[in-house]
Image (cartoon, one colour):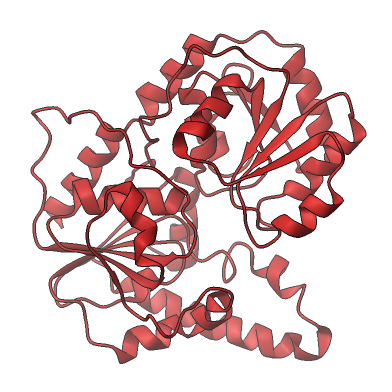
Length: 374
């Protein structure tokens, strides 16, 4: 469950909102950071077109204030099977008519494969992880007899993905780490880096800190690296961890969790903000392309203990707004928490860091400038 975003007025010198643009999102089966960004792009960056999703539940965006959502392939992508069916998305995109007008693809998978009669700009959360940066991790889980077939499919998907990327007029990356992937995998130089902004509902509150740590996100392994985090807390029974969120691996991990870990399930934006404000620190053990959770936590004045890879390197200042650790292994996580507990923290300094570097105004300005110049 999500809730309507809290947003202040944009400043008067903001570039004009481009017209005749539609935002295309990948899949709306869960509401997370990518969905928040797509909602913001649809409401405040792109003109008056609808938000188009390849598949999913159109009501997923309603609580975020998006009025018109069009599901492009409602029969092809369904809950429980859409991940497997999504491999057909590049071919479906070729087989269906182009979208009328200009297209802004908010892409972490296949939305940039959609065609348009006008210009196409891609806001890239990441080149598809299963095909590029995480390909080895995913193919290693395929049984040996069919691994050759899986590798052949991977080569085909990479070829189709490169072709779709080169059909775009402009690429924008959500972090410098993703910009480097776009250069490496596609041979494209992004025109800009626009860090996703945090929802302004995340701010300091007059709540007492509790002796508890918090993790927030989709429970999807091995991507989110929640399993080694649970093991770290198994080794330190005197510490408490709250897990907020849900996902396909939630039931399995909940069943095997140690007694000092509590699974709370999905929570509203306000409830998550309150959890950030009362936590000693927020834990972020995954290598995300950007990662909104650390920024949201810091906006609330809460330090972040994060894996020192991917977007967290750009958002968390080691020793100042949080702690970075080298590997998502239980021993490294325990050591990072030990270091955190030996360090003094300035809540106001942490909040200021988030507000100055990852606010909504800078994101909207950059994206409007890109579309107006495309």
